[in-house]
Image (cartoon, rainbow, N blue to C red):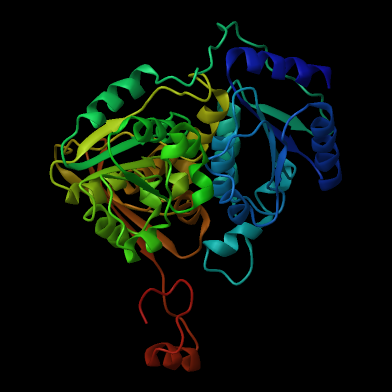
Length: 428
C-alpha cells in the first residue's frame, strides 16, 4: 500500500482529495478497503446500511478518509454529502460490484425513488457514472484481477490552509452584513466554501443579540466554533412557537427547511441571514434563489466561490459534480428562435446524454427542492416519459410525465375513498 501512502502525502501537500473506486466481488472489495483503513491513519467513516440516516448526523463536521459501500445500493445523495465532509488530504473509497455486471444488478436504493415493489436494475445511471470515471484522468479505479494503476501526480504548488481569519470573499461579505440595515441576506455556495464559518464570524462581530436555527443542531458545529460564546441555537419549530426576540436570525442550510416555516421565521426578526448549499444533494438547487428567495423584496444575495476546506481544482469535488450533474449555472436568458417540441424516452441517457443532462439542469434551475433522487428517477424509474421544447440548440422547456393508475378495482375504491394512497400515484 506504499502507493496510497505516497498519494495521501501528496494530497495533504496540495490540499486535494481523491475518489478511489474498488470494483469486484464482495469479499475482495471489503478486504482491500479494510487493508487501506488499517494502513492509513484517519477517521475512516464507513457508510453502508441506511446511509442517508447516518449522514444526517455528520453534516457540518469534517473527517479524514471515508468508505461508502454501494455494492447493494447506491444512495447518491448520501455519497455526495459524505464527500462534502472530507477535509483536504482525504480519500473516499467507493465499493461497487464488478463493472461487467453492475448495470444489471438490482439496486436496493431504487426502492426509495422507483415506485417499484422490488429493487430494479439501474443501467442508465451506472453507465453514466462509469463514463464519468472514464472521462476523468484523476479517477482511481481498482478492478479485481487487474493491477492497480495510480495516476501520475501533477506538479502543483503547496496549499496554504485557511488560518481562521476571514478569507477575501468572506471579509467582503462580512463588511456588507455588519453595516446592513433591516432586511434579508442570502449567502449561497457549494460545500466547503466557508458559509458556516462566515455565519460564525458574523455572530462574533455584530452588536446586539442573535439566534441560530438549522434543520439539525449537529450541523451547526462550525458556526458554534467560530461564534464562541455568541452562539445560541433553537430548533426551527421551537423558535417559531417561542416569543424569542433578537436583532439577527441566522438560518444555516435554509433550503432544507420547509418554505412556509422559513418565511414565518424570517418575518419575526429585523435582520436575517440565510445560508445554504446550492448543489442539489441537500435537497435544493438554484431554485432556492429563483423560487423561495424571490419573495423577499430587497434581498441581498452573496456567493462564495473559492474553496476554504480544500484547494481549488479538487479531483473528488469535480468527479462528484460531474457524476450528479451539479452544474449550478443560473439560467437567466430567454432562448431565441422557433420552438420545436420533441418527445424523449429514458434511452436518451445512452443515445444523447447531453440532452438528458440539459433537461435535468433545467429542472434544478427552475425548481426549489430538486435532489439527486430526481436524477436517478429520471434515468431509470419505469413509466417515465419526457418532452422538450427547443429553440435552436437550447432547451426552452421540458415536460416530465409519470404513468399512474392500473390499480386493482378494490385498491382503486380505497384510493377513491381516501383510505389508501399508493406510492407513485399523485392523483387518486
